[in-house]
Image 1: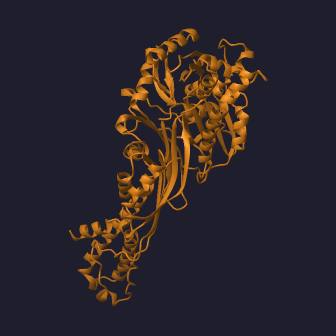
Image 2: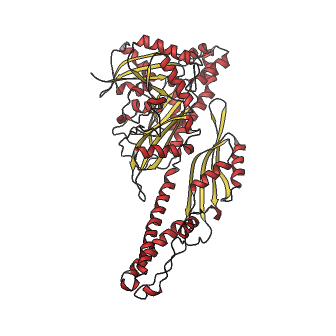
Length: 583
């Protein structure tokens, strides 16, 4: 018997369920939707658990799904999704490394979060070790636990808590023979999802805290209507040409609709501006609020690419779900999320599970699962700061050189005790001095980026948070003395003492670039004041600052800040190595 899975999308205005029989193509075996009371959900999170549970009980009864567990979707502005680059390592080591780095990647304590990760792909940089791109997801415990409790109170067992953005990619994303990147925009009642992928591999994910409800509220306020009446009027805007009431409603939503679509455009532009981002070929639009007359054309004009209404049924066969054939097109905006949750197949895209408790413990758990998606996509953009990899790579290189040098120092000291009988000491000496030169080059002007990040975090204001950090330094060191060659070298060459390194010379030539978000412009000023206190940095300036609105009442400032490194930024690793050698 073919295996079937059930996806449950708990949205702002309704609960939607889809049972899908796995196959090629998948078959939709059951589908249904039940409305939710207003304010039962807010910003993708459960507010009234009892109301959500009651709607789910009704849905189970009406659709007739009474067996098995469900995969529930999560979409909230507080859902954190980050893409990072890590050295190639085992699944167990990766889980531990991500947990160690989580404090820098998510804005709340790892102990208060449920997390999971998926390996997207691997690639070989031209001048480095192989790396893998990893997608990390995190959600606060309370948010996930409330959702699971409401669903299980409604009579379903929860098998997994997946991400709505990934579900949309699995149900709608083009994967075969598609050139460039594809955007998917789902405009719901209280939240909107923006995702960009390349052949099913996500490259950008963002959940916006705005949707169709803001438009309904604008109509209700402008025309002094109850919310239900305003919602009904919003659905009639395609009709009623010349009707004063409809015209007033259109005017009422023009500004909030513009703000919502501009947030979508800004999100997609963020992806486009990433280094190595593939050209955006098209955008698919779905979600209940995407049916608003003229919305898709207006968004396409803003984005400057072909923009279409998504067609989820082109990826499915439709079984006997209780709808006449002529009724099926009106289901299209509501199918993708629930169907994608049921399509829990890594071959279709990343599959995650933020399920709390003993059934799935998240990053760091002994049984934490990873998913590998085979994708030959080169030069893709990284969504967020990959802070761990450059530091780890540099540390590994340094330790390798230091270890090799110290081994040779020991061997050379032993050879000096019987120097008259050795004919290859000169060659060994040259080799040793060359390796010592490498150590000097690595350590002479070394910078501890990890320490610098820690100090920046201690000085910056509480209303500012980092989204990206990069640093670079032009390493210079004293060149090792030219070795004496020939037989005379056996008696005239002086061996460097273990642990000795060159004294750094000249001014440290390096810079840092920080991308950050503040709650307002005074927060940006506070950032500058705080960074000026660090003696390791000089010449702090803000090169760009853009103010934008998030949600209905919140504004943020996204800015880029740069600074020069001072000599005080040099690490003490050279001194530590000298001290260690003396001991």
